[in-house]
Amino acid sequence: MDRTISSSASLSTPKFRCFDPSNSYHASTNHNHYFLTFPSNNPTTRGVTGESRKHEPKTITGEFGYVLEDVPHLTDYIPDLPTHLNPLQDNPAYSVVKQYFVNTDDTVAKKVVVQRDSPGGTHFRRAGPRQKVYFGSDEVQACIVTCGGLCPGINTVIRELVCGLYDMYGVRRVLGIEGGYKGFYSRNTVCLTPKVVNDIHKRGGTILGTSRGGHVTSKIVDSIQDRGINQVYIIGGDGTQQGASAIFEEIRRRGLKVAVVGIPKTIDNDILVIDKSFGFDSAVEEAERAINAAHVEAESHENGIGVVKLMGRHSGFIAMHATLASRDVDCCLIPESPFYLEGPGGLFEYIRKRLKEHGHMVIVIAEGAGQELLSGTMSNLDQRDASGNKLLQDIGLWISEKIKDHFAKQQKMTINLKYIDPTYMIRAIPSNASDNVYCTLLAQSAIHGAMAGYTGFTVGPVNGRNAYIPFHRVIEGRNKVVITDRMWARLLSSTNQPSFLHPKDIVEDKK
Image (cartoon, rainbow, N blue to C red; front, side, top):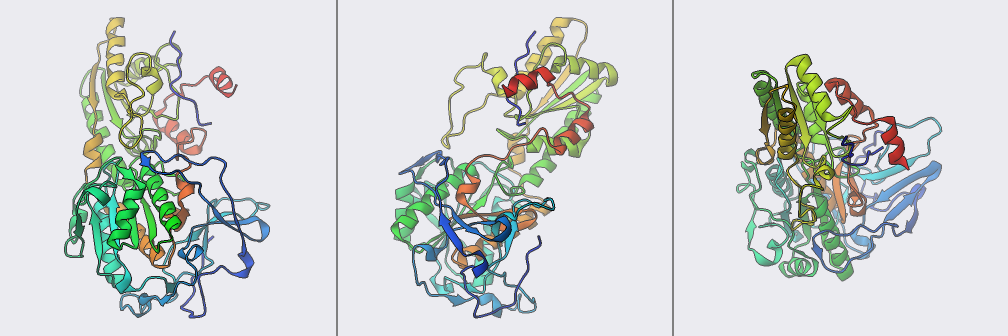
């Protein structure tokens, strides 16, 4: 009996303040205890060539256990920088909006559910426009680069960055870096204007092109310095954000007045801290269409089985949410949840039971699920792509063949299995309405942060409020589905699938 387990189980509303010329960047006296620390686990920058550096978290503490994990500011290493009044106060679009500027002490709580005796907890600086900015409109030379794999919404972010810089802050010099990180030193740039990007949000992909790897920190910063760029907007996933962190550290070491801002892009939704990454809603919506097709195929044949492989190298969020949205899925397999094929309680037994009860079934599997099951049958498992990501075997094709072979050998049940892999179709679609709105908020929040002099941060929603998160917090690990949480329980209830775990397995896993 094959009982090989595929993987280990992974067991406030801020206030606004009207414009006040006397208000400055520095925190109030209630939260003025600054100290610098080095994390015990300094993350390795995958795919980045250059000197490794330690992050220096900037932490502010207050009463009752309040902790602010602050982001770097240009004045941290370039003192006495001149400031300017934010041009938004004279912008016709915002002149009718009262209390538009964010109070410098506004923060967003990392944990929103607390108990009566809970301490203040960890917070992040709230995103939004500040009363004073550290860049004049004529001074800004911004650039935008997209890296890594495709994801719905990249073009929308590019469009809103360009239009936001033009329309809100009067910036007229925005460059697009072509071809990812290596474009800084091996490709030409393109001038971006609102006219150029006017309708790009209707297209999938990225108009700037993208690539994996190619990150040489010193050459990238040399290019930034030589071109006179002082705002860098980097769109990409966790590997890209690690590269952005390395760029920021080198810029700070050289003492350059350059704001480095990350905008998290990952279709897998595996970025830490933030609620979700852009493109995720679009991906789930498109994945549901593939599941619907598999369901039609399955129920149209005797003992029909539809197998759909979805994205999710390390995290099964797309598979989980698409399964919940569809309600036609009988089994969802993700990297975080162990499973085995043969024997009592195994996948084959469940398939047989489901086919006898309903005559058909649909299986959704994330690309990273069950990779350990393939380790004994596949070679070259240690190969990696240019970004340093481990190359995965095609678990969808492998498990489809295993299912067909198993039931053929039983000679008691004929099955009709259809395998659907919509991965690259999903990556290439334009973003839906929800993601278009979300991308706009991300882009504008990134611009406000850079203009206010913040640097070395990623922007994203934390408990529904956009916040500035230091790079080291988003690259120290990956966000994963917690299979002991209620969301996974909802999925098990929806599909009626077993957990594929026995108490004995759980006890052995804890040892």
